[in-house]
Image 1 (cartoon, rainbow, N blue to C red):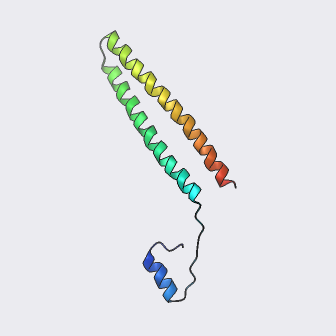
Image 2: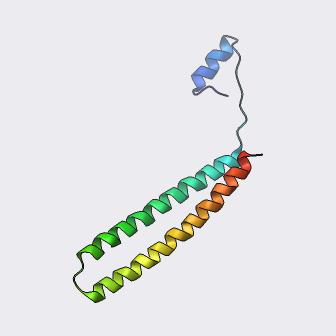
Image 3: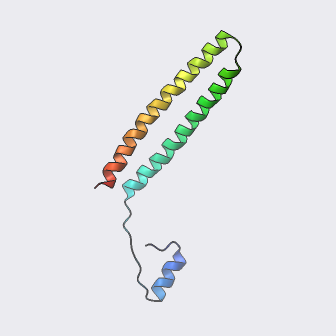
Length: 99
């Protein structure tokens, strides 16, 4: 129902007030859960990229720079892969929403 608490629901029932029921689409719940997971993964990738950028700004030698640039490329690829995943996920949400 639209009652946020069990006590609200019981009170409405006891005083013969109308209880409004809602339909909950479980597939949208699953999509929202996937969205939360993707968001946390993107946040972690962003943190990794920021750490690598800070480290690159402090490097003094070329070999150190090359190693961290390689790590940056790995994280950049992960970021773009996740962005593709988010795009597909967003498309699924839009299709469900429009039904």
